[in-house]
Image (cartoon, rainbow, N blue to C red):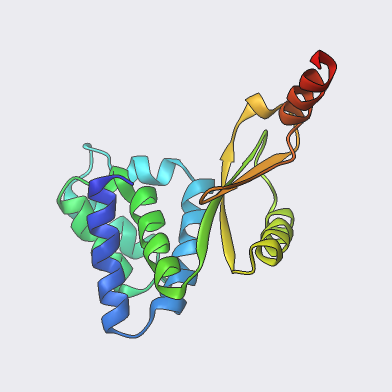
Length: 175
């Protein structure tokens, strides 16, 4: 985790903890991550040197009307300090701190294309059953796996990728 993202994420987490709103703020941040990832130009706009700091902060106020005031305040500080390019990483760091607080393990799921939310949740449920613990998976795109998915949680690897199956077949044939 990036040190800058970690510090800002920790600051937001500490604030959420003090105000006893970790879970609701985590849900809101997850939605904000999805929104920003689907509108990649938004961060570029907030990072634009063609706009003053005040104009960029005003854009936040006008576009993120329903977002928690503490999140908006953090984003304004990030704009002021020239750190808004780390926005996604900061929100993901905050989410990781919330998961650690709640006892939720995080893992990575690799696929050749972005998984839809329904599929991702179904895989999370199955892995949670196997691990006997709540698991939250973070999607990563990896074309090298050819197809299927690969899940990495701590030291456990669940590899259902075509690449892995080819490697296994290759080993069997070479025996």
